Image (spheres, rainbow, N blue to C red):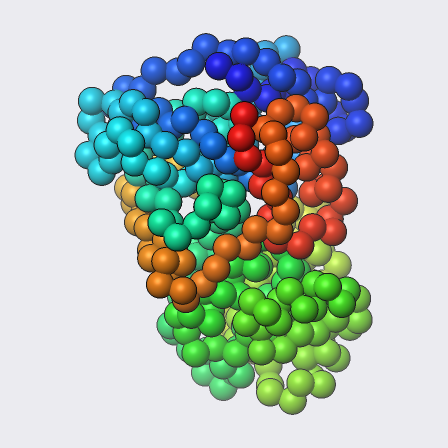
Length: 336
């Protein structure tokens, strides 16, 4: 089968940064589905692994967003059948989905939203799982923070995770959404997604929040730039508030949160699949819930750009754009 892979970690500008290869078609067993992949998406995890994880000369396949059709199923599969259209993010401890055929455990798979194209659906799984788990599993947004503004600040509002988080908060809670963006096109993007207020993260965040006149938010979700913004977050968050992050600062000293009794949550959507937790199937359930929200018009895809075909040259360009950090929404590749 066709696949895109790499053998040596490093920068994307190398000729061998990603390569078109032929690999054996995998065979499903147990609870695995064999999916014929039709669309994939690019996430920061892709270029972070490509740049830093050396597979010791073996071909390593990246890709943790996929849409496709089930073509075979293991003997213990219960929730899917051959012919089902599915979408999922996959597992970090197994080969990625940048291949024509891909094995994935059914417990972390959802039924593709019927109203979306393959490309539109491929933009969603990893970011939707990340956003959902932070908002409802880690933060538990249904539990109010006493004395705080009934609001959440989402830092990095135009990114993939933030773009779905804004919509989920609007669709499922009564919180006021404050998102950050600094360019006219990204400000327009987050407003269109449903943010009540947009503030400029290139300016002092605490001052920007005070200028809104609504009080201190009880929740702060940092999707990027956490190390640069931590002092401001300590200042602006409400006492007994909840702070969450998904990026990878070299160090994170949260001792300044002590006086405010701020809880800190570090979300990693691969935890359930990596450790095969007892609630691993919750990811499949939440993807089906996301599909329901999509198909009933309550939220929409965060697709930003479609590139074709799925090959090494196109994927290199998608990595370059993602690493530049100025992507609006998600980049999706479609069609082998």
